[in-house]
Length: 140
Image 1 (cartoon, one colour):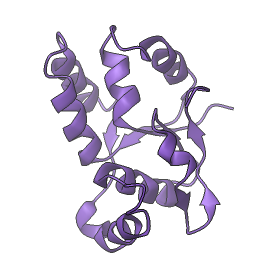
Image 2 (cartoon, one colour; image 1 turned 120 degrees about the horizontal axis):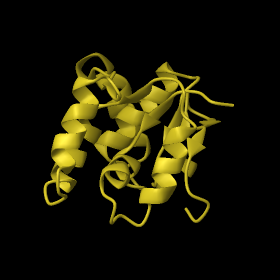
Image 3 (cartoon, helix red, strand yellow; image 1 turned 45 degrees about the vertical axis):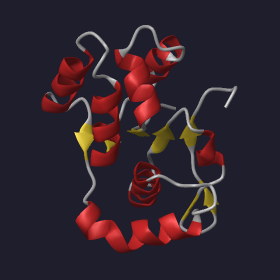
Image 4 (cartoon, one colour; image 1 turned 30 degrees about the vertical axis):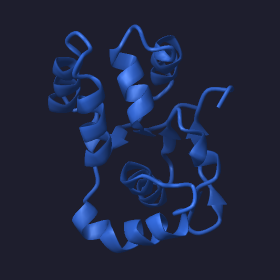
């Protein structure tokens, strides 16, 4: 079943960097996403940083954002209370700000899966105790 996704930094960078070991997997998975491709500003910040040495990587990311291929659909200001609770709950993992924002996005956009390379999403729970639906490589 095709549906939307919340994209994490790993697959976003892999899609734009042909030399990334997960490039082919990420591009293939992207083809199965028919709904909106959402993310948060923390992921975009990480991706721009990681793509700085990838030829045309930052330019391609900018195009994806301006054309609406990827939609930044999160307000940290509005969701700060929830994000801080998640950061506290998963302090021992440790959870990054981007991960906390994406878990909160999964709670808000319950029909979207998280498209990630990060195995910590097997540990994280949405709405306190529900596993998060993920698109993740089998080796993760």
